Length: 253
Image 1 (cartoon, one colour):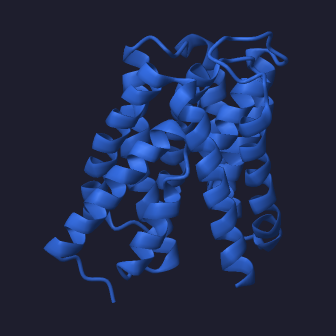
Image 2 (cartoon, rainbow, N blue to C red):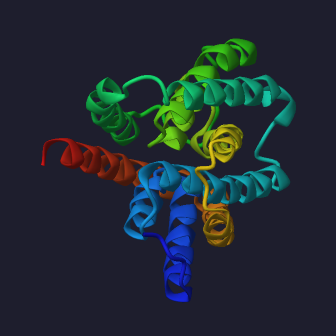
């Protein structure tokens, strides 16, 4: 039975702060917040819904910081933001009707592949490269698909967006991270709307954690601006390995 106490609120505030810091740089903060919410006594659906509320705080403040620093070209990603939002909306609706077991089996290996790409690829740098997809094609493919994935399942969405921007849009790593955070904010909002409609959000707890996320995300986004690839690349690798290990452990142990 869930009961929000002062001690629990303080603990979850700091969990959200750390998660927001990690999310702003590499993604994967849900590895901390979702288990923490379930430990606190929330049912799985309510934990997922409340996690989306607090994650909106982190993704919003990180996005705001990146925009203010001029790291985001908003006009070029308006269509991607819309497609990510639509994809996440569809995914959130379908996850309530479709068995996600197959995705649970495949996902650890996909995330592990992301970590290996960031670890071994020599193409990852601060410099932009030639893009493979135009902004419109990117919106209707990568943004839509990753948005759908976030609504349907979720772990590692920030890393998937960043990988897409690096490999398909030709962005440097810091720029890719900044743009990925805006798309992640769009998918968080979309999923949150449908969880609120379903009554699966603990609003008070979610708002407390949202403040922690905002603090952590602001600190993390500052490191992205000042340290760039030096901090992003190793943290993406570490979080990818951590997410893969946790998902495999939950399935087979």
